[in-house]
Image 1 (cartoon, rainbow, N blue to C red):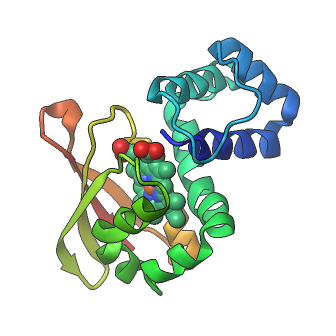
Image 2 (image 1 turned 60 degrees about the horizontal axis):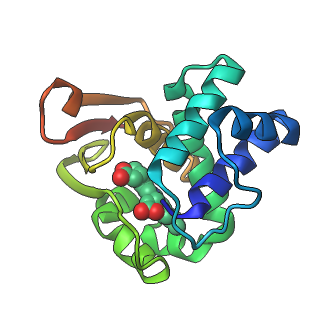
Length: 181
Ligand code: HEM
């Protein structure tokens, strides 16, 4: 994944626990990188190791860390670094979610080697929709939950529930969330 992902994780950890903790996480993960370069590619494996080490050192489950990271991604990383892209994504929660299938094609203009997730939307109602999430990566469902919660906060819309209707863990070919607000 692009270095901006690891950099964003560094931001989140340093804000919550301080720089010493981040150095300890890198050491435990066996990651020997001083400074992550945003537009350079790093193995996915490295990001997973950082999450694993953060989980061990903080005593919080990896899923919780990924969920917090999803919120941080929307409210800090995307907002502060790519505010215009976020603005183009939609002016309210349902509009943004409906436009999500096209979102990363715009991101790919900045990051041409992006291997983005794919999204589809179905069953749109006034206060709910189904979000279909396709990826070749494993274990990122909690990250998507956090992204959705972050979007709820971005648009000041309380999210009532995010339930997993189908999941790859149970043999489906993709994960399907029912998002209600
Ligand atoms: C301006 C805002 C955004 C930028 C710059 C961005 C960029 C990226 C980058 C660089 C990656 C790593 C993949 C790679 O390097 O190959 C990624 C992954 C991902 N992004 Fe975005 N993204 C943005 C917004 C969003 C939003 C709004 C969502 C959904 C609500 C989203 C969902 C995801 C997910 C789930 C992944 C994990 C990769 C996977 O599932 O395979 N992103 N994005």
